[in-house]
Length: 368
Ligand code: NAP
Ligand code: FE
Image (tube, rainbow, N blue to C red; front, top):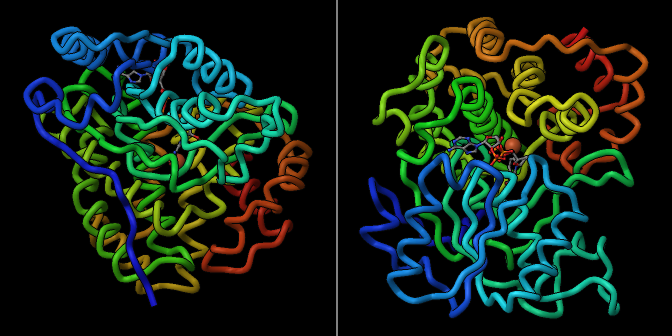
């Protein structure tokens, strides 16, 4: 038995926002949710405000979203949306603003304090419907534009955790490769490896199905050449479009399957050591593949073939080149983090049995 559900209307192409804006305006008063620089540097903010002004739609720009947004910051954004009277959201940015927008949409309609508390967002069911949202990704990695997930930083628990709800799928996502063309090379590499991680974790996941596998292999085929180019240089324009498409395909895969321990074990690296999300995954991905290879050798072979690589060693060497990491770790902190990571839901969807001892040994092999 298997199915496929991804209710986001996708619109892709050069200048798609300005030339075909239907699906962007989802109400009468907009809040644009973006990061400090992503909206401006990508050019997407200017395109969106031009359309809103042309159509006389009032809007406010909330550009205070930080990387790895916290639950408290999302609630503050929800209060700002309510105060402005926004009835829809346009999210512009990388995974951080897109994920923040999902939480802001929930909190705007369900203010914490009257029977709905801050952490109730993790229940995934809300009395009032979240505000409708459109998305414009400006990184090519998370696929958040097509997933029902939002990953929030929880300072109380010193980690990150995702909430999931079909109610926070975007209504529309606009994909334009031009918006990622200004990204620094290392951010492009980190985010491309996040996309790779989604494709591989989805493909090897216990919840994978013929439909998610089909998309995952296509995503790896699209991404393979791009990763090779990112070793040495910034991508040409047509490759930006491909990287973005591969990232969206990765999102479509994990929307069905979820991720695995690569993601849950990556969160402490980001929380405690400030390692970007995609890089955190990439540091662990090679060892994960070696373990998956023992259970599903035909699947790892298909991954390598789709990526245009000859062996797992080649994959590990590519990841090393793409992800230079100088951070030092101690054995004690790695063991400490596994107290939390072993409780993650996605431990159960790994293709191999995961124990705390195994997690410690993965961390040690990859990080010491
Ligand atoms: P990000 O945190 O959104 O952005 C990384 C950096 O890139 C920021 O400094 C940002 O600047 C900058 N930036 C973004 N677009 C730019 C552009 N076009 N030009 C120049 N700079 C730009 O990174 P991300 O990797 O896309 O997202 C990571 C987050 O997504 C994490 O919190 C992760 O847990 C989450 N995630 C979510 C899902 C999901 O399914 N929802 C899946 C995987 C990961 P500013 O901040 O100044 O704007
Ligand atoms: Fe991710």
